Each structure stands twice: as structure tokens, then as C-alpha cells.
Length: 369
Image (cartoon, rainbow, N blue to C red; front, side, top):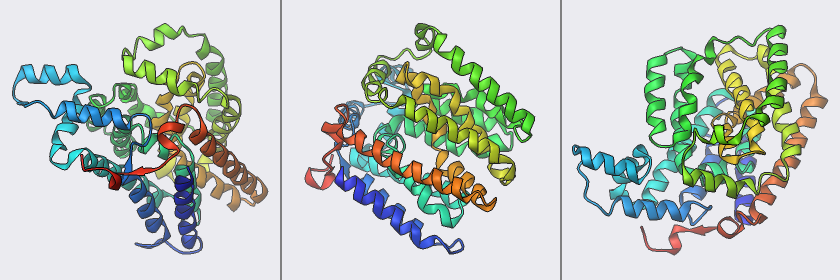
């Protein structure tokens, strides 16, 4: 935990060097991401799934496959999500550690791209803080949920297709994502969100009341009906495991992670139209929030959208500051800093994650695999 905290703080501090400067090709943001990416690339036995992914990698590559053989394809599918198995096989020359490094660089490169493209330099530090200190994003997300984050990576690549309403390329890529992680099937209708307008006050109020009704009705949906969409023993077991660590702070997190997106909605009209789609997608994630306290397997669908908070939250704070609502803006930043540090610490000392996350180990300590 101490290593993770120091590395994360270092990355945030490096981004402060970009605070009062215009965008530049190389600066504090780049140095910060270099530190975070290196930290994640050389991790070993980090998170509850790391060793199981290593074992799967060995199994997938212990057989001789012919991808032109139908029986082989059926066999691959029976061993896990087809696309994920293929990735493991293609990365065989690199080894498991090489695959982890490659995926980590891709994931972190994408996060860097979103911050660099959309966030003003003076808020780089806050974006990096949100990413590094919220366990669901860096520690559990990029470093732990490798398979789902691969699907998230593909989804984030599709955002420009959503904005430009290019439905066919979007559907094709999401289809690929479903072969890597089955939860991605929920993303198929998301491409139509660009047709929904939330700019006016009337639309915002309608969304608020719809959300209120949804939060009342969603818990009444029988769990069996929902889980029938996710018939996967591993996902069910995983949901039960991480659910134990999620229940204690659901009340507090609800206030923060529901209230802040709604505040983002109130500031969306003041943003460049190119980022409106990011705000809409963040709000869409609120529909899955009620399930976090009921079944973490379903609630984890919110991860596809919550990652966009690293862009929308800083933009919202920046909008408040430009409107001279500085007290509100500074107060929100202060609350997030305190709360994120608390959940960061609680993550590492929880009984669910302590064994595999508290002590940082590196691949330099073991033979290459």
C-alpha cells in the first residue's frame, strides 16, 4: 500500500508542474504517466485475479491450436471467452509478463490520451488523482480486472463512433469486446445515446425524475432475472467476493457518485460540444449504480462509464471556477481528496484485497513467465 500511495502521490505532484502552462508535448503529465505505467508494468501477483490469469495463460498455450479448424474454435470457446483466449495465444511469444506489460501500456496510453485531449493543463493533477486513488480505476481496474478492462479499452475506442453516429463500426468493435468479456453486450444500444439531448433545463429535470424513479424501482427487479443475463460461475463468485468490500460505504459513495454526475449535467451546457458525449455516458453509468449494493456482478457494469469521471469531473470543477463559484468548486475538490484517500486506504487493508495487494511485488523477483 505504501508503494502504491507514494507512486500515486508522485504522479499527482509531477502533474502540478503543468498547472499554469499551456499544453505541451512533454511535461509533468507525461512524467506522471511514465511513473504509473512503470509501476503497473512490473507488478507481480497484484490483485485477486493475477495468478488465475497466469494459470489460464499457461493452459491456453499448452495446446497446439489451428485457428482454421472448427473443432479448435469450439474448444477455445469452451475454455473461456473466445477473444480473451485468442489474445493469450497471440501473446505467447511475449510470455505472460510481456502480455501484462503490453496491455498495461495500451490501457494507460488511452487514459493519458483522454486526459491530454480533454482536460485543461491546470486540472491534470486532479484527473490523475481521480484515476490513481479510486481503487476501481487503477488498482482494481487496470491492474486487476484485465479482461474487463480490455473490453473497456475497446469501448473507449468507440466513443468517436458514438459521437459521429457511425453505428456499424461501433457494433463490430463491441461485438469483439463481448468475446473478451460477456458484460460488454450491454453496450450495444449505447451507440444511440448521441441522439438524446440533455442540454436544456427541461431535459435535465426529466432525467432527474427518471433517475429517481429508476432508483426506486430497480431494487425491486428479481435478482434471478438479472443474473440470467450473466450466466457465468466465475462472475457470480467474483461478485460475491468483492461485494463484501463494497457494502460498507454504499451510503456515502451514493451521495458522491450520484450527486457529482448530476452536477456535471448542470454544467454540461457550458462545455464544448465535443465532450457532451462523455457527460452523457457518465450519466448512463448511474443506471447501474443501484445494483452495487444488490449484486456487484451487475454493478461492475458501471466501470464502463465511471472511468470518464477523470475527464468530466475536472471539466465540471473548471466550469464552476470560471463562474466564480470558487467556494463550491474548492469544496468539492477537497471532499474528493479526503474521500478518495480513505477508500484507497480501506481497499488495501480490507480482508478481500489485503493478501494480494498490500505488499507490492515485482516481476524482477521471479523468473520470466
